[in-house]
Length: 437
Image (cartoon, rainbow, N blue to C red; front, side):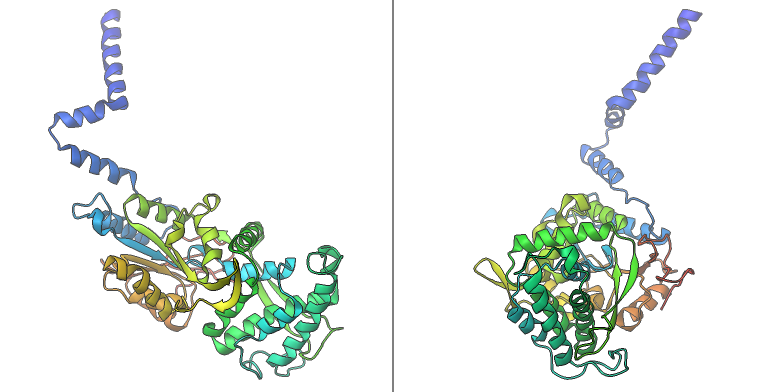
């Protein structure tokens, strides 16, 4: 009896091993299922979207999107590959890579500009006169363009003459202790905020990328990678910078706040991966400089693995191998209606159809989220904002119970940068969840 049991046990064990090492495929084949169906079933099983911290319903809707449109679906046509479009800043990552890079440029004095060039760029295309009413100095007086630019001129001339990597001999650590550096940092970042809030992104977004003038693409990308790595290592902290009281200059004492730190978004990275494995192409559409975003989106260590030619953003003219302070002629400003224009120009014109999925977080993404009849789902990272994106967020909230929603709202905790498994978010400085702003 013992020998019989051993033989039966060996036979059963062999059967298990056979199943685990390929017998399962043979067994399925014996049922006369077509090999194409086996391949499709195997492929579909391997492309389940990682659950991570998606809102449960959002995960379900995205899984269904993959099933409907991916290469495991019966109607998939490899000659008519579907595609998805993602915003970058505050959608694919937490916080803004371009703003982080501006502060990093300032803190490391990473400019290749003479004092004359700096003076021209900070005034370029910015109307003269006072800024919006919110932009006052500590004395309550309006700040105007020429006053603050004059102060920045004086600060930068001192820094240029003294910093070892510009035209001087002093170390960065020493330079950063000076009143001139502290004044320069506060006033240049204040000027960035004032220009955007007063005159809008059509002026402010090209203006900020002019600081890459005289750099090659490789130099800008090296700087962007250094900024990314630095900011990924920082805490998520809003820091207030105030210009020194001992150096009021013409503009007076001003204060500005910068949100330090960047976080990767695992959910976006794994969604991009699932889309691409499903035969759905992934594109990035950003209002930051295209070459800056490409560093983040394409470098393997960050985990997004987007193709370089699939990154669309702001563009600068070049001359003699370096950037110049002119926006690319004929290239739309890739923000708001400009994002729709670029998608039509670069993608719809070549493919003949729009994106099946679009993700964004702000007014700059409003148009591309809603402008294409082919878009089955638009996902909004919930920053509890007002304005146009606030209207879409409300529509998404109203559709939470709908079987086939047009828009999804995905929550995030701004204290940690992590997503939340719900539609609601936690705003920086708060503790409770909020659905709408």
